[in-house]
Image (tube, rainbow over all chains, first blue to last red; front, side, top):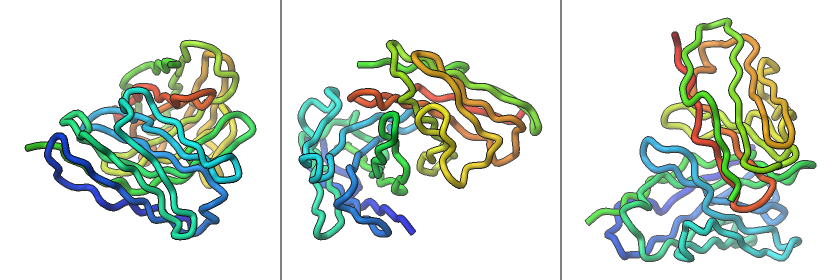
Length: 123
Length: 107
């Protein structure tokens, strides 16, 4: 059974950093790209970025709205994906989802999601 | 960035109704379009990928169609468990973008 479990969320002061982890099981982690998606309270879904599988270079892409403050990485040996968030702002308050990226004939899709972890940025 | 616009933003319907949600892209995305369902307090769930392919385990009352810029999600006969918020998402290029969501409520 595929499982993605996020951790590391919580209350953080503006300007500080936080690293989220996503521990996965049930599939060969190294074969997949992983993505992060967030959802502010009462709002819609926002794609943060993704990291490709090593077979495809292990490179990353991000939404420009993240202002270069977020970094995604993955440890294939531990089956963990990370989201490093720096210089946090109040508007980063959201539930953060870890997502498995599946390559399809037409585009990619997010076929498995974690349960989400809440990050609250407030003094 | 490709803008995704869903309509309507909210919809009231009854059990057994046929419901259609539309999603329009600001440029052609061919058939790189996915649909997700989200229930309150839960993570989104993939329903349809590549515009019309049903994700395994998703009931066949859900279907997707369209290509280019205009897409639809149809639920052929609403069931009580279908009342949720639905999002479209383009994966033609990055940044991947979502529609604003359509909240489907019980009439």
